[in-house]
Amino acid sequence: MPVPETSRPLVAIPEPLVLTPAAALFSLERSRVLRESSSIDALAGYSAAANDLMAPISLVLAADALRIEAMRKEQQKSFEETGWEMSPWGAYTASLSPPPSSLGRDEGRDEGEEASSSSGCAGWFLSPEAREAALLRSFPSSSERNQIKKMLDETLRVETEAAEATIEAAGLGKQEEKLFTPQLLLWARSQICSRAFAAPSGGNNDDDDNGIVPALLPVIDLCNHSPGGGFPAWGVVSSKKSSSSSSSSGSGSGSGSSSSPSSSPPPPRLCWLRNAAPLSTGEELTTDYSRLCGSDGGAWMANYGFVPAEVK
Image (cartoon, rainbow, N blue to C red; front, side):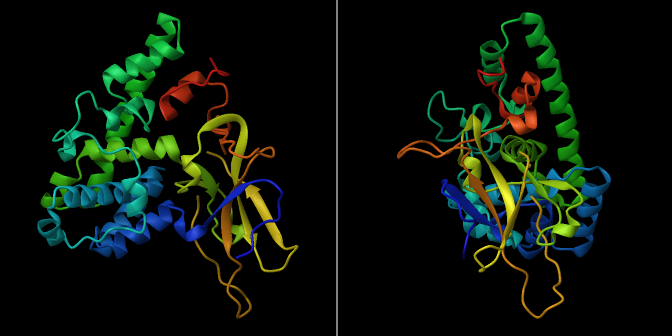
């Protein structure tokens, strides 16, 4: 598949690999996590009405995390009674920092290990110890730390309400309610907050790009932050040498398709990452997170759990 011509390094992700709210709803139905079409409709309705576009994505991550945990504990046979299947993003979910001890991960954990609540997640989801350490590193003023702490507490409260509302909207039964705990959904939402980029909501049809939606971009979201680093862009790429167009996306993607007046399928759409400047051999490919948070230290702490040096 041809990609945009550039002399700069890039990573290209086909649109079907991008986890968006629309892709998540489709996956939840296909994997039988939500068996009834009414549950899909109710979840979609809640997500739209509450402007909670993370809700469907959080359920996909949570369901995959439960399947992964069952496999780890060799409980696959009993877990298959639910009828769930792993989503196409199961391997991606397995690469994330694991959920907290609500899934029994305290068993076999190395002494001092707290990966699920101290790395790779939003600041509002950090353990109290990790949060305090992050605040001390980032905000020298005690009054500022207290202000940010109150903001993180309020964000946690709002996210908890959203997690509970997602479980209720999905109409999960008693068995699933015991599995889909608010804590598990909070873990999933924190992963989305700290990893999501924004992309056009119109899918393959640029004319429908009337808004942006959060999206998880496997591989691209492995990149660390660096001022002036690269940033994802969406584009329709055809086999013709000169026919490619792109649009930049903020840090949370859209999935969809459009009918074509001709018999030919729409040209493939990719999300790609170009570096802002040529890289030397062995130099790290990075992204610039500041498009979401700018110079707001509180926003950095809430979304990423850290504040970069250039913002302090």
